[in-house]
Length: 252
Image (cartoon, rainbow, N blue to C red; front, side, top):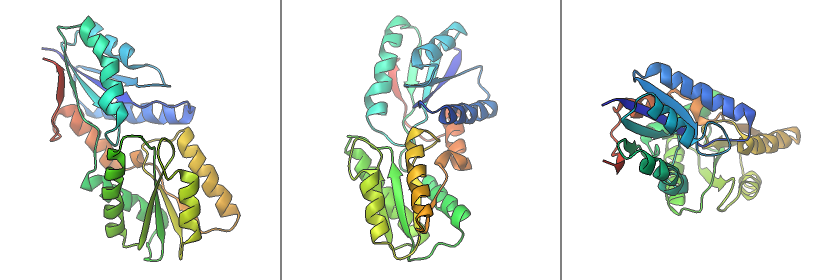
């Protein structure tokens, strides 16, 4: 049996975000000893899933482990990626396909957020406020996940206020979230994107933070999560099969 790993990122129209994701995955590939490894994206950035899958098959893969580079489980994980793989499963019934889950809410990711915040701003005061900014989804599980993340970040950083907002698909949206946390802030506002890479969504956040900084607000933006080594370790672990996750077999 010849095993392959197919990494699946979200994709972005941002050239910077696309290059950052590909560079990150290239680093992961260099850490993983596997005969066949390919990069693909769900949308907006090429190569897409079918092309990456076909490349694996052309190189002789008889078992493909799909490793989604997604933080939380929502529609993309539950529906879009399986839907993209379904016609490929039908075309290549002899190929065994497994999908790793999204990263999910993990203590070490919440630890990483806290470390990124401290690395950016130094000492965090109780009077500071945190604004967690998620991509957003209509899936209700996203709100449940962010409720856990919110509590974990607040406990670790010792701040009295942690708010959550989203960039699309659900509320409160970013414009409302940043206005709300800013109007009630006693200290600094620390904006934490719960995003892996740069992209158009993060650019929106960056522009608003810069505008508020120019207006004199004490507000800071934290780097996206892929800058922390724990995210790299999670992806490498999934690819190597060392992570404690339950794969969902599409075809056995």
